[in-house]
Each structure stands twice: as structure tokens, then as C-alpha cells.
Length: 378
Image (tube, one colour):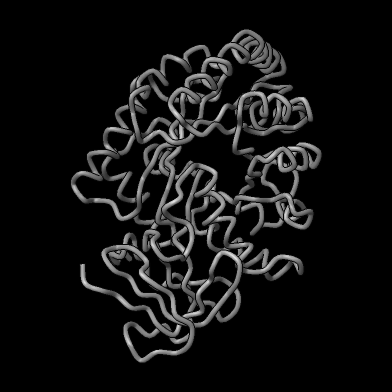
């Protein structure tokens, strides 16, 4: 690969912002120089940031099943998803695949394995521009979650597994208000139908959640896969996560759980849409509140890919104690470290040249160019 020089940029390092140039050799960052330069591609003062690392996105599922009962061509869905994440500045994406069906539906046994195979094929055929890894979202209260994950026990692309329980009375749905809205009102269930629905979900959770958590955590530790908790609400939930060796606390639903998770050394993850909107779509805690307390570590685009780039600028603008390098580390260096990807997420000599040119005069940032391992992909 030819040498590349990106000059006259505002370079966002992990701990500070400098003006200067970056030289890329053989897909890696060779060196960083401060000051102006007449060599290479002139950024004219645009930002140069590390490629974003996305740990939790349901976006692929939205392309594959764009309407209830509709299944899109897998390769086409993957390419559409990939194009949107790359042009949002995301160079490493953990594609979420659902393991286990519940009352909210789900996918048939083997369907997510087929999707993973399609991702691998698309990579082999050089169809994709981002680096795609797998995040298996395991519904531990589901009777068939172990059957589904068995299809992935030898897959090296699996680098993250989250342990979830969406049953009523658990975690995200500790109170029935939002559960009733989400399941009863939206589905048009009668009171009697809803009561039967709730009873089935609670019975399934009581029967399966504990044994399935034990099995999945042990499986992950044997294979060196990062484990995430999901929707922790209480200090008991945090203690349980510590016992399971959890590294990533996804979407804690209370300030106490977020504080305790951060103090225990877990990376606390919240949704970037939560930051952009200023509140949670499900009525839980606001990510900005956690940022102000110093206990927000990682952002996820969740269901809006571009929010992953937009949100750090919002945080840096609105929280006096948070600098732009600190805010951008939530979508670059910290998520990469949390899942053991030490070769990316920062602009530093020897690391992958996963880089994004960003222009922002005020308001919403704009992605101008994207490089993955020194190759321009957008």
C-alpha cells in the first residue's frame, strides 16, 4: 500500500487535541507530527478521529426484517447495514444476533447461524467496508437459548455475549408500567390475555434464567469471550455481574446500578440516541446524567448508527467537565479495550489506521472520509 499523509488536521488523541499530520504506512499509523504541512491530503482544520467501535447495534436486524414477517435477502441486508455504519464513521461493528425466542417473537433455530455465515461470505467476497464481529444477545429466560448458541460454539467472530432477561418484574421491566405499554397496549391484548402472557414470561424466567446464565458465563470464560450484563437495576444485579466476570454493563436502569458497576471496574454502556434525545426512549435514566457523574464509559448507537458520532459532540458541548477527546474515547478507545481489541480505537503509532475525517462548524458533525487499515472506504 502507498504511504498516505493526512495533514493540517485537528487530531483527536485519547487524552488531548493537537493540530498536525498523521502518516500511514502499510495500513498502520507510522507517526504523528504537530504543526502545519504542505504534504499529503490537506484537512483544512477538519477533525481526524479514530474509527468508531460499535459494540451493540440492532441495526442489521432492522435491515433483515424491515417489517413484521418480512425477511430480506441476507447479503443485501448486510451490505445496506454496512454502508450506513461506515458512513457514520464506524470502522468496527459488533453485529447483534438474537439468541433465544420469547413472547416478543424471535428467529427460528439456525436462522442467526445463517446470518453469521452470510456476514462471513460477504467479508470473503470483499463486499464490506467495516470490520464485522459478532455480539450474541442471549435471552436467558428463553427455553431455546442454549440450542441457538450451540451453533456458535466454534465461531471465532463471536467476541461479545450479553446476558438478558426481559421478563416482567426483571431489570428493564421492574415496574409494570412500561411493560404494559410495550406488550399489552401495542399488541391490543385484553386484560385476561395480558395476564396469561405475563404469567408465561415470569414462569419461564424463574425456570431458566439462573441455569442459563451459569452455562453461558462459563462458556464465555472458556473461550475468552467478553461477557456483558444487560439492564441491571439493583446492587444485587451488579454483585451478580461481578461474580460472572462481566466486563461491560449495558444500559443500567438506575443510578445506583451504574455507579456500582463503574466502581467495580465494568465499562458502563448507554445509548447514544439517549444522549442526542436527552432521555431514554423507554423511560429509564438519562445517559447525560451518568456522564455528569463520571460513570459513563461507552456509548452504543443501538438503533440509530449516526448517533454514535453525534453524541460525543453533544456531551462535549453540554458537560463542562467533559472534553471532546474524553467524549470520543467513549466510542473509540474504551469500547475497543473493553473487548480486548488493543490494535484500534486510538490514533497512536503502530495501531491500525482506522480513521475518520469529520467536519463540524456547529451543530451536527459530517463524515467526510473514512479509512480502514489505511484503505479509504468512504
